[in-house]
Image (cartoon, rainbow, N blue to C red; front, side, top):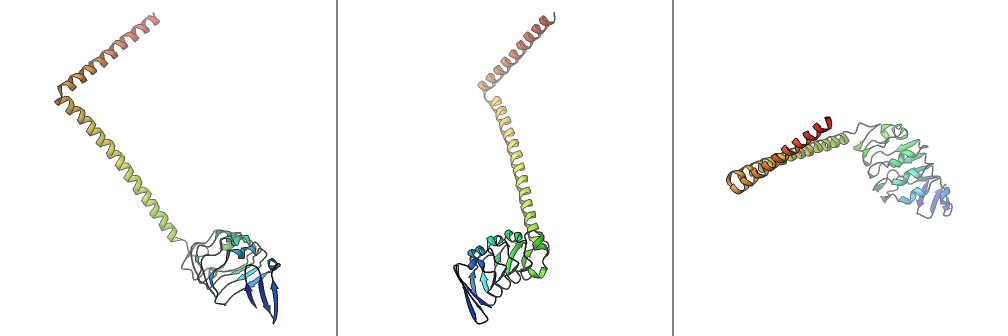
Length: 223
């Protein structure tokens, strides 16, 4: 069976007979374009075939990512994209295909973690084989993600340590400069020294007088 598909119509050749789908393209249930040496990206418009039950694009030279909106094809029961050159991550929307019973994404260049869902984890590991950078159940655990997380945490910790060190260094240097600046000013500048001690004496006298007055008022209240 051979299919020739455009965005508006499809020509189906089956047992020496031809069937054309145009306005009724949405009624098409099965598409098999396998082993046709197709190139380029899978068009996003294919997701408009929301009544499709089976899609087979295997054994071609398709590139680009898996269509992000593939999760809208809710009736899809079989999906075969194996033996192409597809790249990128598996769309999370793929996990919403509750009727999907056949899945083959093997022998591509997919990467990242397989989206978590009961549906996608239930398939045999062979469905994802041949994608060296793909990880997560049912394949091996994603060590790449863990390493990246560890590196990120280490960088954050280093930044925190650097921030802490810089903060305390600034406080200490500010205190030292300020303290010794005041001391040197008092030692070598007589007018500043006299003004400082005069201010200190005035403040001390104000505190003394204020304290005495408060004590007298308290004594009068108690008597």
